[in-house]
Image (cartoon, rainbow, N blue to C red; front, top):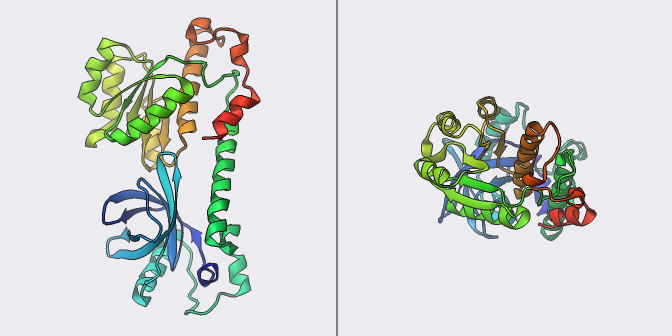
Length: 321
């Protein structure tokens, strides 16, 4: 299969596409790379190896393929689909689409093997020359490395540990009960947060009146509602509660709109659960630092200086998800 793939250039591809199977549809899948006989993307649901998949790139361009592999990445999946029965007409349309989205002409090899020069110019990694089994192993290794680098890059000063703010009350507002369960379970086990949730904004008010929240995780575009109006309503009633937006793929303008509107952070898919945890810890850290002029207080979750050490063991726990 690697030799077959080398007939075509594989280029970076970051467009939103629709992925369908007989059981489900994901209209907001995120493309990663693409060629004339396959594509790789992130989606919300799992795909079975060998199952039939339909990928819609735009109106009038829907291509049937076969799932070659699918990896879970916490609360989403990365999959590779081969267009094993793509027609010449579909390839022509797909080539035009790749050229349109990438802004560069896509070469036509007319069914012949690519030249060495063409292969060397591909924006692909070493997985191109691996078997399927080796490709899956390499992807798993890359995922672990990315997770470690993400954690190290986002460790903010203040010598925090994952349990510094144990007991803080987090309210998750999202219409997807499965996502609520996944995020809530991770934050409970990893940070020992107290988690409550609701799938409607109207249910949030009595929930917060009964017991104040320390932070709200709010789904962008919840149930089709205006996200900025939701943000303003919550801030108007509970001005001291920080709000973090999380969502599927959104534009930079939308993310900036949420941040400029007063959200503490904006997390967009794809993202690791540990990154959600880090965002919450950072938000609490900044809040405590601001109220205490940059110093921590035992009442805010720090019992003694030993709690401030970010040990190697804790780092290893974070890497092993």
